[in-house]
Length: 273
Image: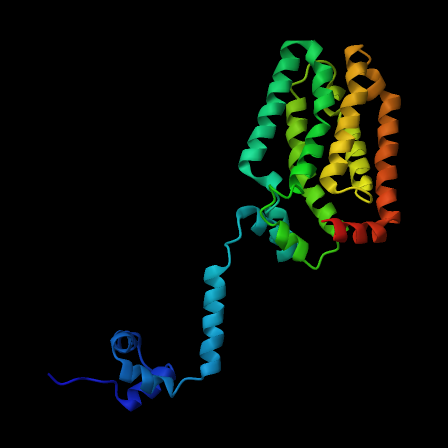
């Protein structure tokens, strides 16, 4: 049987893209099984261009496909790097969000059925954003810890980006649960300023402590202070008008502290992350 090979003129036209789709498909099917024709074809192809095309193919195949959240953030104007870091935050996992929603729903239902549980909900709700910040920076739970450490972002910027991502999902969830609370409408949002104050205090403490330790210290202090007050039924001390002004002052002070100490915090976070 006569062995058939691609003619030199056909090879040149194929490389130049001057053949139709049917003939191109026939030539490609032959090239798969014919080493001499592949060698003849190689002499007409720019090796650098082939390497560049192959690198693009490998990059597209190996690169993870962006999820819905990541694509949405890019469309909203976030850079691809920032969108990837936010989307990979552990607190955006479905299992974690489902657990938080379950806890809040249980607390809201308990408060609805028994008014004595209302103070308990108001005490627990501010801890939800704090828990999210802790999870976002827990080394054993963060799948992109090493990538985050290698990013060219300052440590403080990374801290604020992930904290913003945590607040964006935990605060709305707690607000929705708060709508089921009994009593006046203001109780649904009475925990917001305490949560802002506690989160700001935890961020300010990252100048001396690791984020997870700072959050833990603030959470323990909150529980230690509020438990006896709640047991005495003095909820107004924590959530009344004067207390709300105090929490607003604490939140504002924490933000101002971060701005004033941002350079030192950036150095500290870069070493302790």
